[in-house]
Length: 150
Length: 113
Length: 172
Image (tube, rainbow over all chains, first blue to last red):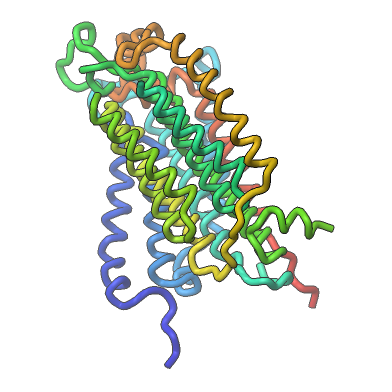
């Protein structure tokens, strides 16, 4: 009998439901970072955890057919450059990192200047970076051969 | 008194890095040092019977006690950096195991070259 | 304040278990216990941002530690450490206690910090930036340079992991 990759059938069924819930929760914590506790770092790690959940439950080869790892590797420095770009925009107003977008009424979702945009840039960097590291560590085969594949 | 408990945790972490031979125990010691330092900073900024530093509607900022928000902001980045350090040391440990077949640092020191 | 002392003592016991015990799975579970105790401590210290971040970071580092250790058939290492290491360890403890005594005498007592900059950030945070979460306002507006440095550190660590993991393929 051929061994099924990944975990058992019960885990796969439950994963289909919980992955979307975890992703939604991560997006909520990310976008409301300037009103409730959370912000870019916690939201980015939660969204990376939802992708790792798929890879852990279904086995690596099966999950990699649906997720594009080259795209996620590409997104990580995009987040860093976006953060630097937002900071340089402040140069138009006076000095580096000035908060130049209009600050709306407090306690609304679209307030507080550049802070929500910076949260999104941080999420791209942290989430893509951690997912890439996890895939790299799971590709490393732990046996005593010195030659292997990438 | 709470400061002394934090520094005891730090001392346990440093003992694990110095004295143990197993590489995984050294990595565990590094993790424990991270946790102890973060704990110490947040305890240093705590005020008794105060509120968390999140404002809501109609709060009068001048009259309410708040906990010091500055150490919390600095430790937030430190937690994520601790995760990065753990990942890198685990990757190096796996590579060493692949090449030498053991996790023991004395063996690795003897086998080199 | 009593619950903080109880949590700190539990963390110390879990750390001693993690360092001394002799099996792979038990070590990883004990490290998880230390991290979860730290999450509870952050909740009691009125820091909800830090509690959320510490919880998810703890989960991720447990996954990575499990990947490295559990399931290996590496031989157990007996006969711990030689005389030089134990001597260094024993020399280290009185030095440490001396420094801790000096440090604790200089710091203000637990529960009443000197809040010069903190008071300024709390009073003028909502006016200057418009954000209700003061910690987010500090890390992204008042102290944005530190966040830029942290993004650089994360980039460096991801590149370093990719370099360490890379294996040369066989030439065909």
